[in-house]
Length: 225
Image (cartoon, rainbow, N blue to C red):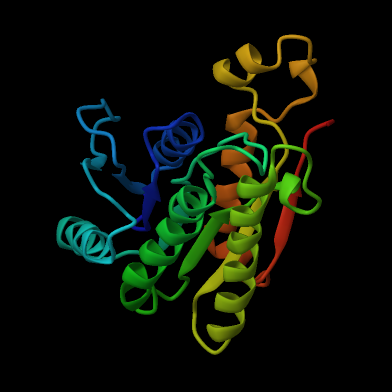
C-alpha cells in the first residue's frame, strides 16, 4: 500500500472509473470528486459527490475534505468535463458551458489543490486535454476552444510551478472507446480508439514520482486513430 494520495475529479465517468480502479489496484489512496451522487466506489475510496467544481468554494471544500481524511494530497487528476457537438450558428451557443465544464473546473480544482500539493515531495497535476483541440473540425468549435484552454492552463501552471515540487502535464486523447461513442459513431472502427484503461495507465504514470522530469507536456494518446 502506497502512502500517496490522489484526487480524481469526474471520477464517476468512464475514464474516471478506469483511473480509480487502476489506482486502487496500484495501492494508492484515492478520493473521487464528482458532481454525480450515490455512485458506488471501490472499498476504501473517499467519495465526494454533489461537488460543483465551477464553484471555487466547493472545490476548496472538497480538497480540504480529502486532506482531512488522508492527511495529505500528492496528485490531482482533472478528468471532470463535458462534450457538446454544435455548429457555430446554433440557436443556443454552448461556448460558455464548454468553458465552464472543461476549463473552469480544472482551474478551480487546481487552485484549491495547490497549497496541499506543494507540501508533497512529488506533487502532480494531470489534466485531460484533447487531440481534437490541436486543429478543430466542423461542430467542434466550442469543445476544441475549451480544451485548448486546458492546454494553455497546463503550460502556464507548469511554468509557474517550476521552482516547486509540483509538475503539471496533460494527456490529449483522440476517441475513447466508450458505449456512448460507439452509439454516436456506429460506422467507425472502435478497435483503433483509445481504451480508457490504457489512458488511465498513462495518467497514473504522469501522477507518479517517476514522471518528475516531465512538466508542461501535452502528451498525445491517440491509439491508432
